[in-house]
Amino acid sequence: MDRLRIDKWLWAARFYKTRSLATEEIDKGRVAINGQDVKPAREVKVGDTVSMRREGLTRTVRVLGLSDMRGPAPVAQQLYEETAESLAERQKALEQRRFAREPALAIEHGRPTKRGRRDLEEAQRAGWGDRWSASIDDETPKR
Image 1 (tube, rainbow, N blue to C red):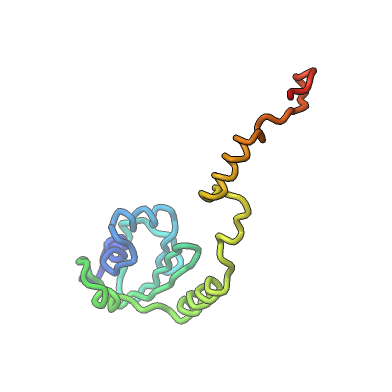
Image 2 (tube, helix red, strand yellow):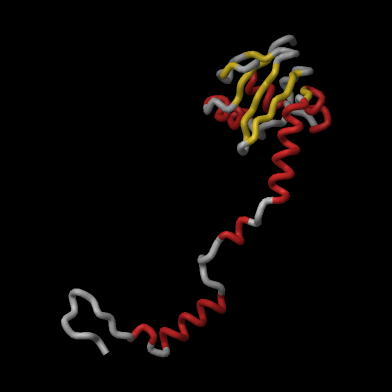
């Protein structure tokens, strides 16, 4: 076997869990062979360079072997070799994620906690909801 469909190779090399997921990503234009956008039926051969965009990161690998069967991860890793630039970019992204702020700290208001909800219910029962409101429609304030 000297050529294989790109969707089948991506599945066999364990970049995607199913062939249909690989096909969807290819159709969205997130996979390129030797710098050219491809279709799922495009054939890949040993020595080609495959670029994949996933989760905001471009991964570039060189094809070392072909297999149309999905095997264990150690066997799948022998089908490709990641380029030095791709490895450096992944390492840089890992460092940025490690030192980034916790996303949950940016949330100021959200769903109240159980204690906060009880405080709100207590305030409403104590007459907080009975306050008068001066609105345009009302001529007399409520008491």
